Structures are given as C-alpha cells and as structure tokens.
Length: 223
Image (cartoon, rainbow, N blue to C red; front, side, top):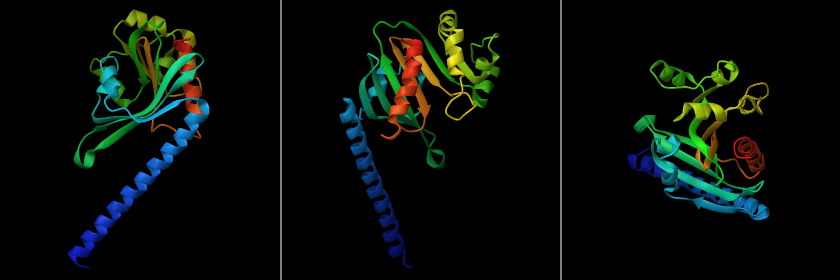
C-alpha cells in the first residue's frame, strides 16, 4: 500500500470511531432523558466548571486537569434534594495519560453542619502516605473499619464523633459483591455531603439501584 492509502485508512478509522462515539452519546442521552421524564427529574448533559464551586471543600475536585462534570440528574428522594452526575479528570500525559471517572451523588442540606472530612478505601498508596506523616483517624476498638478506610478531617474530635459505631458498621457491611465490604468514597463539609463510586454514571437500567445505595448513605449522615 502507498502512504496515501495508509493515511486514508487512518482517517477513516478515526472518523468511524468518532461517529460511533457520537451515536453512543445520543443513545445515552435519550435513555437518561426518558428515565428522568418518568421520575420527574431534570437532566443536563454538561455543567462546565461546576466543580469549581466545590473545590475548596472537596479535594477530589482539585485533582488532575481537564475536569468534566457531565450527565447531571437532579431531583429529590426522601424529601432531600440530590444531584447525581458523572465527574472525571485527567492525570499524566502522553502515553501515561489516564482519565479517572466517577459516579457521584451530592446533597446540600441547609440544616446540616458536618465537620470537614474525607473517607476513602484504604489502599497501598494511602498506607505509604501514612508512613510519611499523612494523618489517618483509626479506631482502636474497630480494627475492621480502620483497615478498610482512610479517614481524615480538620477537626479530629468532631470527625471521630461523627463516625459512630453504627455508621462505621454500615460502611463496612458486605456489599453487592458478597462477603466483601462495600467500598464507599465519602466527603462532607457544612451543609454538603458527597458520595461516589469508581466508574461512569450507571445507565438508565441501573440508576435506581445507584440512587438507592447513595440514599442509604445519605440517611446515615443527613437523616
């Protein structure tokens, strides 16, 4: 094959991928729009820069670059207004570029006064950070919770008081994967609570379960 043919084939492949991605986006939007219409929710395809309003309180919105807040669904459950959305950011560059994607739920409750905190599943990098002075609030009386999560905050006493035995038991209860504990990501500050999972926002056929799982977390911390 001549170089011209190779170039033409490459352009054709890129164009085909672009068309497929566009069609997939249209199908996803249609499915989510129907889901929201039936339930009385509101759908927005993109909220450019929406994360900036929350970056001061929540570290996840300061991570990486090329941040995107997409597929926003807003409504209410159990008298509490919620915002569900897909959030992503990019780390690295070149061949090491990686886009991190999360399915997130945000609640803003005027009557809440949460101490600033973050809770993420314990992992190798977190344990390594602790060896170099990164603070983690462990509970001597609850080694299972302490092994499962890294808990941090500005006011250790208030954060420890927030994570009662009942809440810690809820957060270490078995998840959908069987006997393994659920892996919650959670952060709060004042009137705001954010919960998220790795991966994109679920499709319309799995959104009810996602919202129900998140709402169970909300009831633990906001009532």
